Image (cartoon, rainbow, N blue to C red; front, side):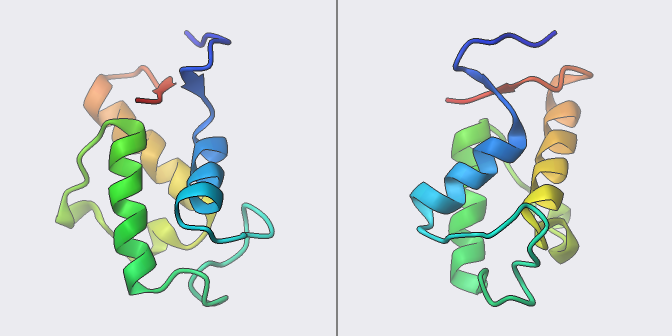
Length: 97
């Protein structure tokens, strides 16, 4: 069940905001290849992981981090949604902390 309150947001929108506001990286589209385009280097990747954990209230295990999950904003959002479903059962609503 989804709500229109500000605390229930689309993972794609949240990830886009993290790139823009926290990493200060302008990504042209949700399907832009962040790795091939040189937008996401190793330092930015670590910062992104920290920001994802904070924003979504999840803990990312080292084992769950596969580079292809972080290739595009779309794939990051899908990865986060899957992590949320794993943590919170079938509820895919994103609650921003």
